[in-house]
Figure 1 (cartoon, rainbow, N blue to C red):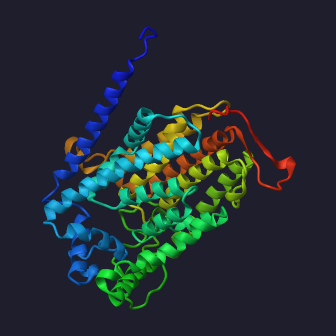
Figure 2 (figure 1 turned 90 degrees about the horizontal axis):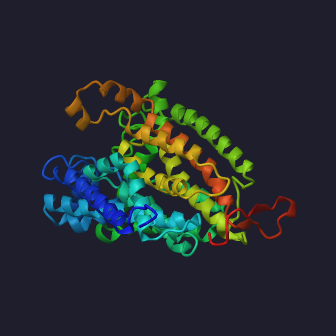
Figure 3 (figure 1 turned 30 degrees about the vertical axis):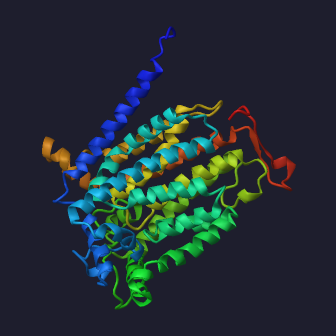
Length: 456
């Protein structure tokens, strides 16, 4: 007390109070829509009911179900409830997933970067990270989407990756059968020689794709899978002929803020994905070249690194966690379709950012990461043109908002943030007290990582 520091009990009480206020506000904001506009809930609910009654998933309700059949299968337990009750149950489930994801992420990234934390610091880091993407979490919850489920699966897979690689691969297999985004992890696992996780992932893609057949039968499940994948192929610009396809909007859809979508709208490509994806590919290659330079600057292998062979895993654990977060965000940035609700997944980027900013390491500058974090927050919030804001203030920002989203502004800011996270994260990982040494490596190329004490 005599030091002038805020008493621990007061800080802890304030932390819990803020968490309670945040959670209550998020719940009430979404719950007020029950009985009215519940966003995508209707698509999931009606598809699950259709599955229970042996009807067509992709023409159920308003015809808005565009996912593989596993998601409808997972929603069948709540499909037996009245719509309003089911909406409340799913809202509570999404809030639990959000809280579990950010707490697990804070704990896992702290472990990987050798940062000492207790339950209270974990709560504080999780709160700060959540507030940095609070607007997107609010939108996700009030639209009853699936991104918080995806976030939990991504985070759980990372936590299981080193100690339970088979389970990690299985978790990714579940995630792929909900949305296709996790496919980016398959080449990553192969390039890191994580054979067990990669094999489990590949096998689980097939296994969980077959699971809905226990309700629908094999023929109906194959039919549903064909429709789902036809929609994906059409989005990617692959001709599907007259085959029936899920009603997925094209790459130039107004709501998509990804870089390929921004390019497609800028060049007038319409829904023709080829040119837009090629142009976005050039941007991705340029970003990869910059990232590769950062890796070389820190004497860390970039494209291929046999993680399982390194004898001192401290820095490797940190770098793998860093890459996991970057891969999720990069998949959003360069996806052919990313709406603003998907950006709630950037919680997996802001969590390690908050940890690194709040836990300095000798010789590691945090200014680039602070700048990158600010840029990402700016990209997610500016201009303030949400419908709620417009109703209160006016319509002055509606035009800039449309332009900002049209060029993919939020994802360009996310790309800048990824550069800042890599710039700070790599030297932070190298500062751990271990050596990035593989058996048989040339002694002249060993990386000395001895700045931090063994306690890290």
